[in-house]
Length: 222
Image (cartoon, rainbow, N blue to C red; front, top):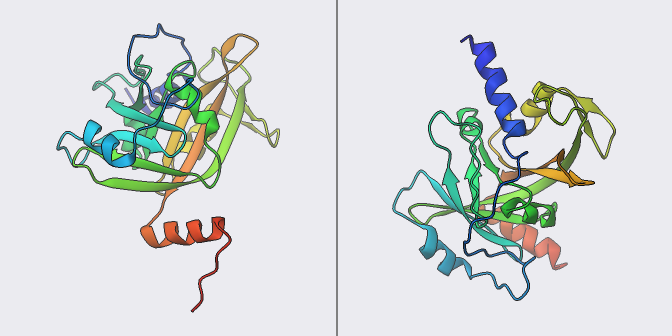
């Protein structure tokens, strides 16, 4: 298989892997769309997901929104997305491009993605318990113009611009290190009508503190 063919295969898998609805298996879920659900505090969540592996992301925590496990795709299966209602799936192909991609079905954990907005902080917990912070830069929504064709075109809902599947893949998974959350958009009963991508960039503690000050209307006096 040529490198071009392999790329097309991986790109297609990225865009269709969360299209299919699956049965919901019983599992504990932490997300605020559930009545009476309460998110764990961050220290408790870290203790629950860490397994000693420093290089593997094991949990995603968005204050006020979600606290989910992260599971990995089996080797050689870029289409795999967990059917666990309390888990998102690390996308191996994004890792191959030097970025972190997380997939989820829109009728399971992915249903909470739409609650994340620009300026929010996403925390990724690794197996050794260390936490990497990301700042959400954008939320991008696309209509799949040919929903069942992985090589079809996509129209950005905000601008009306049309992208090929390859262009969309490069836009959301290529470039400087960042985090991408991906799920599908349901419309009129069509679970694969569109795609939602949440794009977030790494943030250090100094920048995070500045963001918090800005949000509360405080100014740093030098």
